[in-house]
Structure formats: C-alpha cells, structure tokens
Image 1: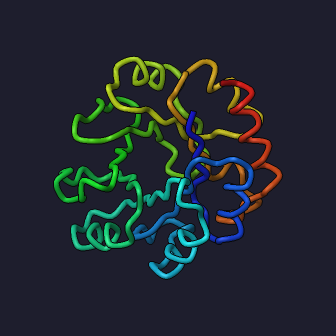
Image 2: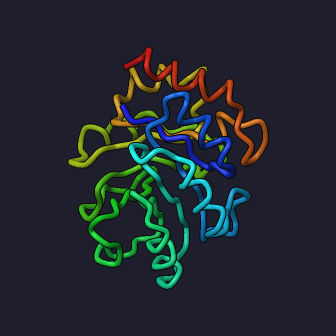
Length: 193
C-alpha cells in the first residue's frame, strides 16, 4: 500500500512525512488556483530533502503544454495531472497518474489513476465509484478525498486501493502539515493493510 503525503510546501514537512513512513511526497506547481502552489525553486528544495527511494510527485492542473514541459524539467518521478495531455508529452521515465472522479472511465494511457473529486479541498471520496474503479482498472488505483487518520483505515479495508493520498486531512492549515496527524495517518493505513 503506497502512502502519499500531498500538498507539501516545506522541506521540513517532507522530511517529517518520510520519517513517519510515507512512500511518496506530492507538491503542487503550475496550479495558481491552489493555495499550495509552489515555485520551481521551492519544488527543487523539497525534492532535494527527500531520500531517493521516496517517490517525488508533482500535481498540476495546468492546461498549458509549455507549463507541462516545465513540470517535466523538474524531474519528478511522477506527474499527477487532471488535464488530458497525451502521454507522449511526458518522458517515459516519468510516470503519469491521471485524476479521475465520479462518472469518468479509467484512461488507458497512464501508469495509474487517482480517484479524487476533492482536488485538495477535503471532500470525501465516493465509495461505490472507488470500488468499481479498483475492480476495473488495469493500473494502480490511488484513493484521495476527505481521508483522515480517523477514517483511512476503513477506506483501505473497504475499497482496497493500491495506495492512499492525503493533503487536507493531515494539515493544521492550508499547506502546513501536522506531523502528529501524518504519523497517525500512516499508522492507521499500515494497521488496515
């Protein structure tokens, strides 16, 4: 079970998440509508603070192909994107995770999907849709949306995703992580596996 702590805005929060057992760190860039949107320099600072065995993911909502190339130039391990850019626009060395939500089918041009109607706003995932995606997808399925240390164990047991992704559920305020909540979230996932 992969655990991604997303919406990380400081290297200290990234280091705390990794120390607690996170498998992936997510940062947001080229998405100015997000209060967690970071500059290229900040992304590089956070990525350089993370061990090489931890997945470095960039979340972007850009619809601009030039900005997508700028995201690729940051050399993430993975790009999570909501806009349907062709897979060919991303180097093969970078995994592409497509964001899907209720009613959408699983795309066939990606390395994974994240079931997320929340987009970092803490709205709860749709259980029925999430189960159906988990059963049908031929790629890893990650669950996001409204997950907290208190409810993630039940989500893992009932949905059986390949991984979980949390931002708001482990924060003190937008972009400021609560290290105690991060540890509790990861512990709850590991106990439910």
